[in-house]
Structure formats: C-alpha cells, structure tokens
Length: 507
Image (cartoon, rainbow, N blue to C red; front, side):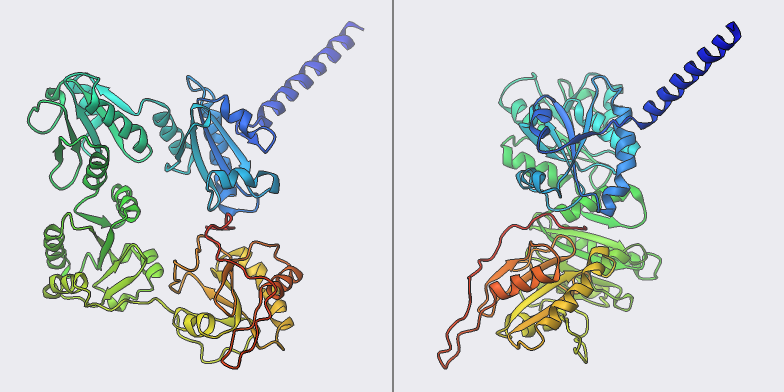
C-alpha cells in the first residue's frame, strides 16, 4: 500500500515537473500589445522596443524567433529591457501605426521615458546583434573617458566615435554635445572626457572641442563649432569616407548604409576591382571627389561583382562597366557608361553645369499589349497614364511579391469587367525594373495601387482587394475628360491626391 502511494506521489511529481517544463518552453518574453494595453504599457516603461508587424509579412515571420530570443536574454539584463510587438494591420491598432508613421513591416521603434522620446531602431535583425545594440542604446548616450585604456577600448582602430573634450562637464558647449548625442545615438557613437591626453590619436587640445575619430581618410578631425546644426552636420559628414567603398567587405557596409541615407546628390562609380584599369579609375575618381568636397556631392566606388543589387535597382548592365551613375535627391539619374579615366572629371563637371540628360530606367515597350491588364513601363507611363485622357487604375508590383501574385487574377477580372468601357484602363508596372515619378506615386512597398482620373486627380487605393471593391472604386472615381466639344464631366466624386499612404504589404 505504501509502495502504491509512493508510486502515485512519483507520478504526481513527474507530472508537475513536465508541466513546469512545458510552461517554461511556452513562455513568451515579447509583450503582445493591442489597442487596449498599448498606451498603458508604454507609459510605464523608461525603455521599451516595439515591433509594428503584420502576421502575413514574410520579413516579420523571419524576425519573430530572433526577436523572441533577444527578448528572453534581455529580460535578465539589469535593469530588464522590454521588447514588445503590435499587429499594426488590425483595424483597431492602425491608429498607432499612423501615430508612429509606420510605412512598412516590420518597423521597430525605441521608446524612452514613457513614450515621450521616440527613436528608429537601426540595428541588426538577428538575436545576438539585437541584444548588443539594445544594451548599448539603453546606456548613456555618451560615455565618459577617464583613462587611456578606456579611450583605447572605446575608440579602437575601426570605430567612428565623436569625442567631446571639455574643461568641465557642464556649460553651453557640453549641453549642446550631449543633446546631439541623444539625438543621433541610434546611428553614431559618442564619448566625452575632461583630459585630451587620454585620446589615442592627435595632439592634446584644450576644450571645448569635438574630435571625431575614424578608420579612414585623415583618421581624426576636430571642430569647435557647437552650434546645434553645425555640430550635427560635422558629425554626419565626417563619419562618411570621402569615397565610400561598396564591396564584399562587411566592415564597409555601415558606411554604405550611411552613404545611401545621406540627403546629398550621390555619385557612384562601378568598376571591376580586379580589372587592369581599376586602380587608375579609382585614383582619378578620388581626385574628383576631393575637388568637390563640401559641395553637396557624395562619392561611392563599387565593385561590379559585389553590386548586383545596385545594378538591378538602377537598371544597369555589366556591358556598361566601368560606369558612373549620379542620383539626385529628387530621384533623377544621370549615366555615363563605359567611362574612361580622362572622361571622369569633365563628365562630372558637365553634370554640375546641367549639360547631361537624365537617364530613365525602363523595360522595353511591349510589342503587343493585348492582355486585359495593360503593361506599363517607364517609357510608356506618360502615354498610357498621364496623357491618355483615360481613368487608369495602376498597380506597382514586384515579380517576387506573393501578395502581387495573389492579386494578379483579381485585377484580370476587374479589367475584363471594363473591357467595353474605353474610358477605363487597368494597368500594372514592374516597380523593380522601371523608374517611377516619386512626386506623383509614393511607392514604398508592394503592391501599391493608384488611380489617376481622366482629368488628372490622383488617389491611392486603400480598399479591400476584391473584384467588387475595385470595380466600385473605379466607377465611383471615374470621370470623362472635358473636350473641345464641351462634353460635360460625369464624375461622381472628385478625389484629391493623397499625400500619405497606409503601411504597405512587403518591403
């Protein structure tokens, strides 16, 4: 009887133990937020990271296990760092997506002081990188250097660090430096010290001064201008190499990201780094970059073998290498294919003097365009969309986008329903292979759908993706263009161009 009782007790213990293991295994460390608890949760945290996601988003699904793993590790940090998520595709939660200007999924935000301070998360997307980045972000915006050893550790040989040297850790200059450190901490490293003798490079200087250390060009540069705007410009511009290198070396990748984030006009030369003329091309290109320093023109040189993504984005061909392509802030592009050493300087000057015609990335205009949904390319956009005098519903898509593939047969049915109405065109444009006028169409994800009426009113489509909803939308917004014969408009409602779009499906 006692043995039987012991056996029952053992089974009970094993059951409880197994239950405990199951509970431990299923515990989620990422906080799940929605409209009912979002504000309350944010306000009670001094530091919290929020992922805005959609369940169907492939990038979100890939991030999920890494984000959960990071949340688990950071839960034991002192103090614990909270990671949360909110399904921003749910109707009840869309207000938060609008409030934080979410343009695509997943988007991560770092919220401090109960949500009073909001910062973009610009760190890695794998667990170890997330943990390292957030531990750093949760600490002080600028670290004090108190010895030569700590300076060597913080500055190192390969880091870009802005170090403020001050006679005292107070005053207008110190406050300006710390304010900038807090503002730019997501993308730049800051430190400060009372003694410049601790610093690893450069002569000792009297503060206040900011010395920016970097592993390229002149290795360090000083500035004594503590005006907020000037100081920010100094840090940003000094943190990018005179000529950014785009190749397979991961040490160069952070500078490539900053290069493309720069608001400057971007000059990019792509060459075969192992080619016979590579060094002479790069040397001359650097001369041109030096002579144009400070003139709002950023320079990059890329290895053609490592730049296939850029080639696809700009619509370039291997046969055009070596080449220079310049992209302006308004997204216009200028191309010099098969450039030679002695042409680099004169062509860049011609561009600056307005003597170079813009280059347009476009697929060939189809010889036949008889399918229900008309194919539009950059070279035919004007004729089919802007100058046709028709009501055009146009989808901007990517061939690899699953949501675009799912939408294709629905748009075919919509087009067939309007086949007897010559005033309506249903169209599609491959946004990965054709340039798009960004001042008219804001395409940040796929699919993005716009409607342009016969008289030129533009509106983004944000309705459900059913045949009936598309048809109703087109009928509601269609109009007849005013003609020289006095034909009256038959529009039922005049839409206005929408400036902001909802979060898109896939980035």
